[in-house]
Image: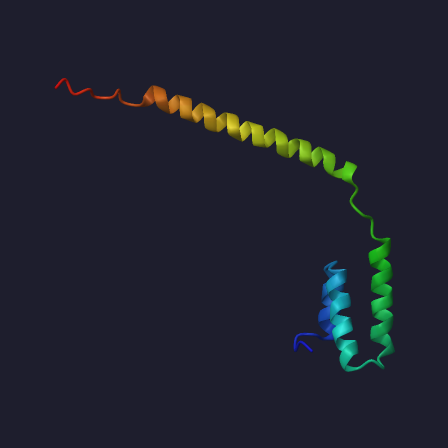
Length: 98
């Protein structure tokens, strides 16, 4: 068992919304002391919360993905513009007449 696994740590993870991690900690504790009904109840309660938690749907991510694509194209255009601008500010090449 991990020495950092305590019921207090599991409760902190739960308070932070890291429910899967809290369940993992409780399971580690239950391996050492399987008779603890309070820990087993905590696992069941947290697993139920995980199932009831709203899930992100693909259509919820569409606006984010569209914005990402838009910003990617803007960055590429800006990089191209900087490259063109640098050509105008560059010193003309020196040609050796010999």
